Amino acid sequence: MLTLIYLVAISAEAMSGALAAGRRNMDLFGVSLIAFVTALGGGTVRDILLGNYPVTWTQHPAYIYLTISAGLLTLLVARFIHRLYRLFLLVDALGLVAFTIIGCNVALSLGYSTVVVIMSAVITGIFGGILRDILCHRTPQVLRRELYACVSLVVALAYLGLNALQVSETITLSLAFAVGISLRLAALRWGWSLPVFSYPAGRWGH
Image (cartoon, rainbow, N blue to C red; front, side):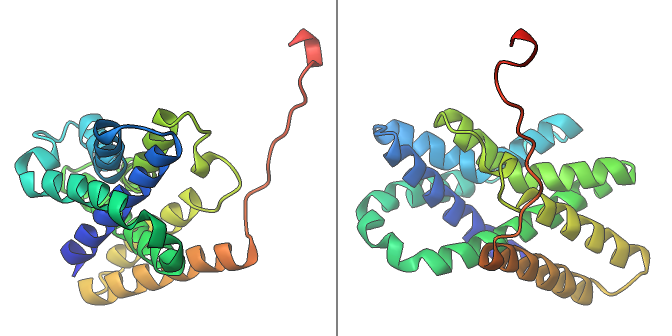
């Protein structure tokens, strides 16, 4: 189940990257690159930081074909995507949870301490979007008001907590997905966000 959700999620993330590239009037190469980075960037950064070589997607070429194809397909269906906005939000929430859990499992398999496992989970969940926004010259969404990275953190804590209690894998995955999706969709529905730090320009001569 987790693998299937992962494949759907990287496809959706690739499409979101392609849309961001389109807003910046990028060519086909730019669209393909941003789609790829958005979908697989989080896992790539995680593997590099953890020393998990070879990097995952290099061992699964199908991921490359899938993400670039999804990005290029977006060019054909972009005019209709606004009708699927709610579906995209759901798939994005599923993807965030799946990426987070995969990040946990990779770090756990390498024997890292709990705090590193949590960092691995969050990096896997959010870093593709951060790279997308940086390459598209935007302030990363996860660093602004949107409740996104915190959802990844909560999912990681829930997943690790249930594992520590030796709850079955099926129940652990089900509860982690239920918590993550519910929290993400509730944040979107009611506009939940973290407090914003605003420091006015001109203080102390800066």
